[in-house]
Length: 335
Image (cartoon, rainbow, N blue to C red; front, side):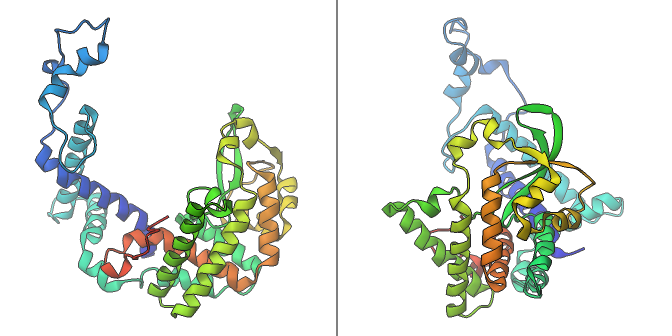
């Protein structure tokens, strides 16, 4: 199995490990204690103080935290237990079964920072090579489908979900997506703060492509391509305030109607590539967005689109590279 498939599980295991390290010093309580209740308080007057008063008097916020709660203690204890399970599975005892071996080997590979840093981008290179080898835009859709199944979401998002206004129906769902920055405003607002964020974003993408082996000039060109394509996607992305109303995200239509919204997106080919079962209806979260995507795919050069898809792969995998060489200095950080 490809190493890249394990990037997200590895990050999850790292998260468990790092939080569990903190738990060893906090020594969370084994469960709820009646001693936490402040019985001097009338619960009908201030139930929160009644339920938590004594706990708040006894507990200090740890120095490495901005807040602390009794449920945080419970979470820390659970993480401590999970870490113990993982380390036991990793120990390699003769009694472990095949499932424990898989769990332990994966955990061990995630904790082996020396090997991860030595290999660098090598485990990811086959995926980048696949994108680079694409010969036409139809084949690029096949590769985007593969990338979607791995985790990154270039151009748009797809899943299956209940219709927002009629929860008993679960159907295919395609929606806006493909942006690196948190919101469309980062791309289209002209105020100084957003302009500054876009500059730092370009610096960040440039640095990432440079670390991936491109020349500084080529990396800068790649970063500008990414920003140009994502800005085009942002222009017809629905505002987050508008999306709060479920009705704005319900546009159930026949599959052929959805395909006709973006003929250059080859949606029928995409659905086959992701292994979707046969279906006739689909909910399109933002039809105008798919018309925009169609224009982007039709007008952008193939090489620019491949650069954009490669960026999605790099951006998603970057947290798994723990060497200082994969810690860009740009203020933008990981958008």
